[in-house]
Picture (cartoon, rainbow, N blue to C red):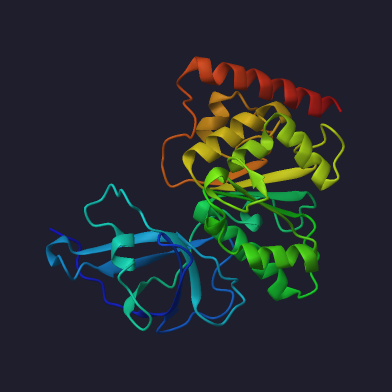
Length: 316
């Protein structure tokens, strides 16, 4: 039996097509929740009925919210079209047919613990290093926007947003974020992985996880005003949202610095003491660990690096 048809309860009031495959969807529920109905970093569910193929029924998917919870207008989502879907009824293929004024489904209840409040706590003084691949920037945009909604003069100097995409046009919200660099001290760098196809791009190149490898990490330390070797969990916490490879490689790059993943099976595989606090958090919809924790050739070197780093930090 296909899923029951959804009762539409929201309207797409605006869509902004950044590219053929990347769009900002601004959705207004019929009954707009009161400001503060979600915490930055959370997600809610969007859904559509497949009217062209009603036998497939409806489809719903969780989408990170890019808006600030203090905003009273439509709810913004930053979504990529899935060209090669695993489902025979992919949501993005239905969403890309929706135009301004069309009806859709949005569950006006948020979920998720990928938030500053639920991880390190709002009072944590360390740098908040946000690592985003593609549309993984959405929860971080929500966090930054919320800071400024609550205090238009907020100092964003402890917020660091590293955003990776294939092309400059894929760096959604870039103009807005660059403005915050100038006005509020945000640390923001976009990097593109296909620079040869991006004429005129003079910014960083390579995948976003490579900021934490070799000389790139040394350069990041210089940009952030940290001493050589100073990018440590005593100074920074990591939040990652994006591809499995982005998450896995960031973890492997930072084990030698002592960053501890917030993932029970990962911690166990890496031999992390139960009392060691997590300092690396990520949004993951797949239940499988982002690195192959069953392969000793993968795990053993990382376990040794992390153990040595944690011992150094404990003795410092």
